[in-house]
Amino acid sequence: MLCVQLWPAIATAEKPLFETTDVFVGGQDGVHTYRIPCLVTTNAGTLLAVCDARYPNENDPPNNIDQVVKRSTDQGRTWSRMQTIIDFPGMEAAGDPSVLVDRRTGRVWVFYAYCPEGIGSENSEPGYTGKTIQNHAVYSDDDGVTWSKPVDITTQTKPKEWRTTWSAPGRGMQTRDGALVVPFNGLEKDNVWTSHVIVSRDQGRSWSLSPAAGHQTSESQVVELNDGSWMLNMRNQFAEYKTGARQTAVTKDSGRTWSKQRTDPALVEPSCQASIVRYTSKLDGYMKDRILFSNPGRDKVDDRWDMTVRMSYDEGRTWPVSKLVYHNRASYSCLTVLSDGTIGLLFEKGEKQSGNRRYVERLTFARFNLEWLTDGKDSLEPVSGNKPSR
Image 1 (cartoon, rainbow, N blue to C red):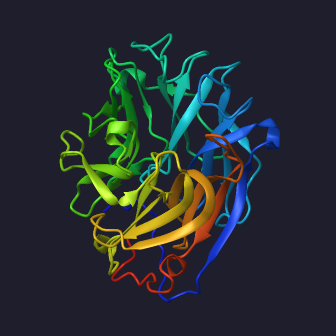
Image 2: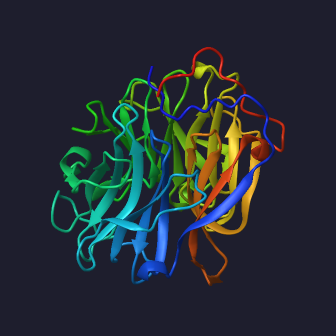
Image 3: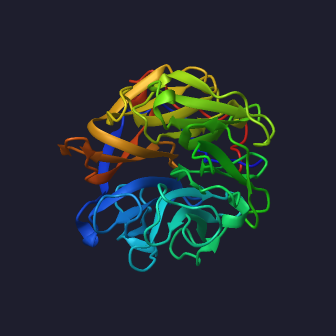
């Protein structure tokens, strides 16, 4: 059986642990603003933090945006110097990354939107080249030390007549049967925003785009449930869907069809990106199923404040655990499970505000354990039987 996480063998309760480290700080290395945090744990236990480096200002494309990475080999206590992995000339942009680890091969993928000079989501045109957002990917086979040249997957992941599709920021997943799955945004020719996934069953040599799981939604994240279905958790994009809570849909046939889009009232949101990952599963010998979720815990549109982590014990039906991570300006985030069983969260934070502008001053890494998250009410139990293979 394939495991899609690193599986800690924690057998005893621990003291509550919570610590933070600033990873990317605006103004350092000549970068005005760092945004769109992505975080994964490699097969070797290395943490890779990937994000946008927005050089002249904090704006979305059109802008001069590169993809950069930092590595940590000590559970996030210290981080390497910044490494640029994608740098297009001038005002061309590489933005909105999504990361994914292939547990079978160890390959780490980074997907991103390539925006030619002057092009963003507001003026992207139909087609595969020219004045349109294009879909690229790069990969590393040495734990994030070196990276491949960009691979263009636009023709596989975008209907030609649509204005654009591109990777939903955060992370993808690998299913138990080995499929690689990456959440994607869609902007159809009639300007309808949609949420999808792209899927590969040949280790990334080819990709296919799923039908829409949600309408007037974007920036989704995906998690595999114990019954083999996939749950897509989506951001509300426009006013008629801004209920102050996340939208979800489920597929039982690997993205070929989706259930009716529904609102999860427990997962309040201010219309912002979020993160969702599997923590533990009874299928892997644990006594409890646990799924983690993070986002700004406010339900008023654009009130990006109070970074919050929630946990479900029943495959995302209810979310009884909720813990405040940061009480101030906070927006995008990405979760991972560390090799020692602690939880990692990389998130945008700031304190300044001017009118409706939300300043992201830094990307901060928070590391905490289950005891801290649950106020001592839960601990990682011993894994019964043999430790699952990766």
